[in-house]
Image 1 (cartoon, rainbow, N blue to C red):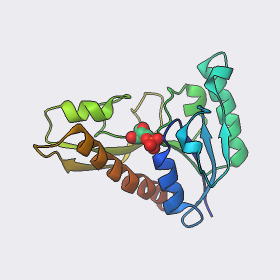
Image 2 (spheres, rainbow, N blue to C red):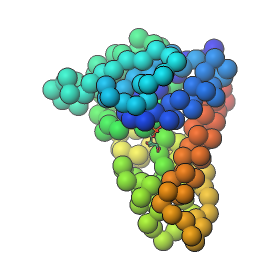
Image 3 (cartoon, rainbow, N blue to C red):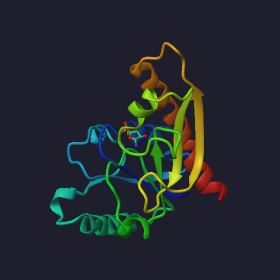
Length: 182
Ligand code: GRF
């Protein structure tokens, strides 16, 4: 069975969703790695996890070097960034085959405020993107993207729910597609 490693920093809802939908079915989630020892996603995690605190390193490059080494130990077919809130250096991007989940219709609304920004803009549609991780933040080649129509009486809360639901559907689909169709 193919193997994946998942990187996350906070709530880990996408991590838990991937485990629920794919683990020991479509692939093995061999490890979940976080840079944040207080990440909520570590709670009730039914698979192996590792914490690699970025504060323990002198530079981004040093942290990424250690991260690459750690991921390498698990020999994954693919690394999945699901809410991994770090700007990555070429040390990572040149050495790890990775995809990232982003809550907007890239190339629109790169960065950490994507949900708020796509809620605020004048567009009639919003959506979610899965893309390859490359040097530029949220700038790698798009793998899949799905959109929905924004409704007139949308609140930020209902909008966020729609984004999250779409993420839970799209990311597992993208992982399977990459592992078995490419
Ligand atoms: C998701 O909205 C993802 O698109 C973004 O960070 C969020 C992570 O949420 N990159 P969670 O940790 O999976 O709950």
